[in-house]
Length: 90
Image 1 (cartoon, rainbow, N blue to C red):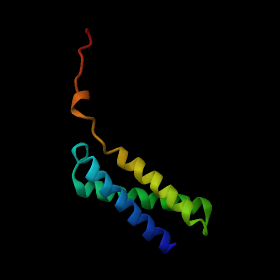
Image 2: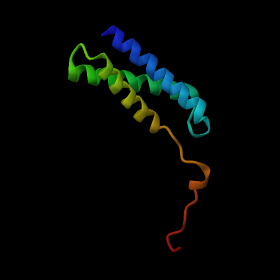
Image 3: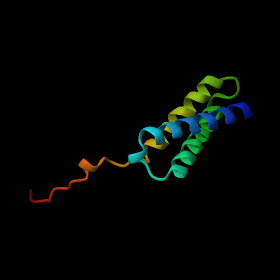
Image 4: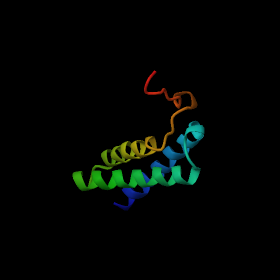
């Protein structure tokens, strides 16, 4: 279980780092993004480990990746061109 937790934390950190490198203009502060990636991966690993029991390392890591990516996607801000609002009468 320690291997699962450590692997998922490293995987979440790597995903968050890649997101900050690629989408830095659409994300908040780097420490928030990195901690969200790690926390999401650890939560995903916990849920998958609780569901599947021991012995399914690849599936646990897959769940960690899915929850980490979903958590990071919640931090994304829209691009500047989509911020225009129309009036209710238009």
